[in-house]
Image (cartoon, rainbow, N blue to C red; front, side, top):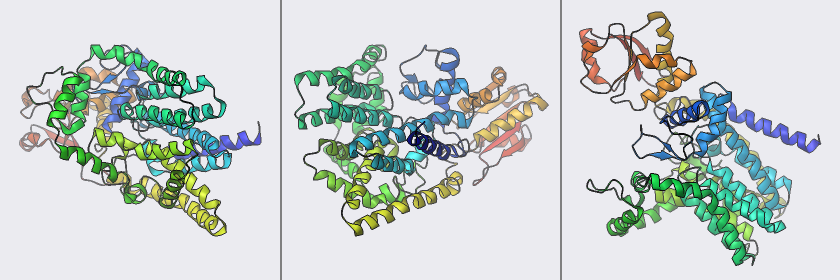
Length: 534
């Protein structure tokens, strides 16, 4: 083994070690989306069917969210082999995303090495991505927000290789990756065609866009979509339902709208009903995604699942590198590959603006991460080549990168865990594991889950039964799904899992018909769940 390969392996091992630290407990609890993805993946690997009984489906239906809510398949099929080999635990179901983050680091190194014609700058790009807070956060979540990035970086790498070697099959591979990336996340439906258009733009700038190569790119992009085209006629309602769910055009279907409204009808209604002010509002929203405070200082104030709210999308020193890099790229008239980075950065918020009108929703635009890091690397390279003073400033800023990331980690593994409990559905794990610990001793005739005001509780219960190998308890599981339950029908000795929102049960506790046997503690909040006994 060469010394270079040894060092590369050690660096990757260090990145892996950093990204898996306390993976099962930070974030503090499992988010509902993580649970739903994990249940589908576990079902696929054990039965080849999803939780709805479909054999190896193309998309995964989530009826607990909505009848026509379907999620993209890449994350489920990627998680499945991990859950086949590892026990169902919090860290195991998050581990696949860690490997996606690790793959991003490897790919951006390869891209940077070709883009800058130097492994040194590729290594810097890899280091900057590793120490990017948003990349770290999403590499530790069993959610699909991060999953388009490997497809984007692989496309970029293949395109760079094609521009060097002129191998047609490599161009076909580049756009094929984009086609496959459609299945990674909802935003990819918009962004992957954008990257295809960027491919044509680069080929045109290099005077390479012949009819033959145009057809090659289209064929590469199209063949992965054959399955989608074949699948859609069986689920014609998904297009309109998805558009309504994500408020595309801010148009919600009226009660009289047909359940199987076609996309053509939806688009016609959209153009008829969307006021001009809504369209201009989406344009205004676009600029929020380039707010320097959001990108480099605070990370916005949207969803605490995606940000600590005290550290930016990138670490603060990139506030200098990124603008310098983007400015330099905008002046590189003879470098279409440089323009790829610039356009990739500027187009990153497009899907976020079109899908859900939410400011600072970094989860919708994670493709900005690799392009932002590459722009920062361009900025650092520019400063290093401008003389001793510029080089000294660049070195000082680079030295601050790991320091600021360490500050982020101190908060992420400290106060953030407590502050984010609400966003991660509170201590459902503790509540369910309390019941599972009591069951062998008390042998309750039935276990009731109060699902009236606590959604997805049954999904969490299924996951923790799998984790503790107690699926036999499903036959004794019941649901309280009304605010007027018949407590007399609950067998004596039964256990009830309730939340503090279940105030309709207070009168039964006050009358003595139900007894509180446990309050599930929260590290930074009052107890959110209680265990009652009939």
